[in-house]
Length: 267
Image 1: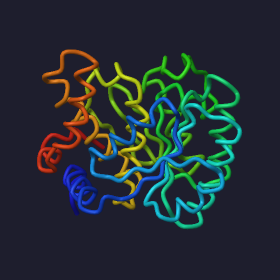
Image 2: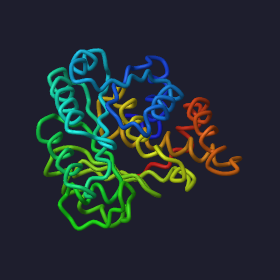
Image 3: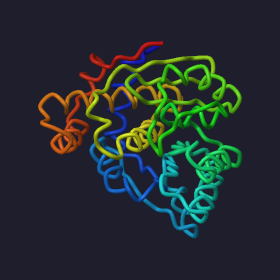
Image 4: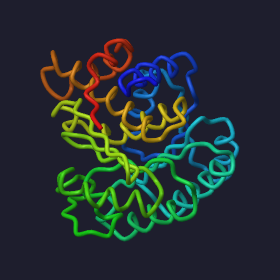
């Protein structure tokens, strides 16, 4: 049986060989950046949110990414419609509950998606995960004001209750299905200095879910790849602007053998 580091390398290789279509219903702020992240990784992105086409588009996809960052009631309806179709087809669904806990609209939208579709992974920051778990949170808009450590116990409980793996991203990432707890220690502080890196992480989990049927493995290996690319990009970046360009290059150029060697994944 391969180690999880070996699985990370295999997933990246398969992703680049098969170029899975990843259907994103995501927010206006990150559409372009998310598409470029997926292209750099080797996936094929599509951004389609019209309610009268999402079911058809999901039929072509290997994963569906639902991101509520700039939601409206119509968009939530489209997400649920796409999610129900994905559920019927066995297409993995990755939910990013952006800003859950900040407003009732966001929190209720995330809970509705979880109730009406079969989500494969929930990826959020610590404050968002605490909000979904019904715990006290210090969310600041769409940014986290809580730590991964503060949210760990609630994430384990939430994953157990929902039957859905939870991934919390931060200085150290944590992935749990309620039984397994995996930590990923790749990444760099500059990743939080540009908008959309969290949303991009969700999309990369979607891409890896398109080639790895184990949602916990897909999430952990995706975040290790994503974080390691951030480390490589930060090595010669002068600030957020140059980092953003170098980050796309690092995602594109990172060899699978380096990912296997340098992925800092522990269970």
